[in-house]
Length: 94
Image (tube, rainbow, N blue to C red; front, side, top):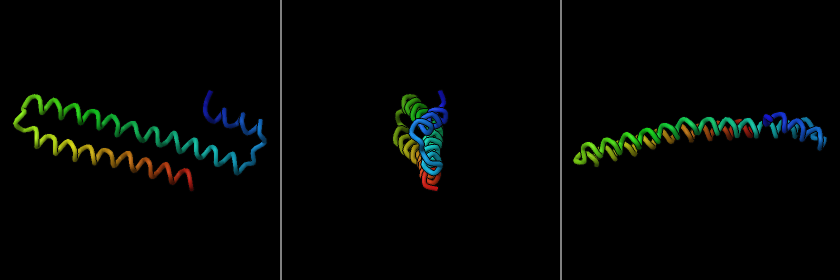
């Protein structure tokens, strides 16, 4: 059963007003949006760390440079998740 159908059934059972129902739907939509926004950075960070470990295993003498570059890449990728969180907040309180 979808989230919106569950919300609609709960609204019928408890006699929610239109404003309350709109708030619940906005919160559910914002939560799903943030969940989807977090998938991309999670995959990106996982791939980045995996490739960095592989590069360090192949050339241990360049581990310092690879590690520094890896942490920069993680920071930039994590910024995408933070942007998704800001959009979540904007959708929730708009």
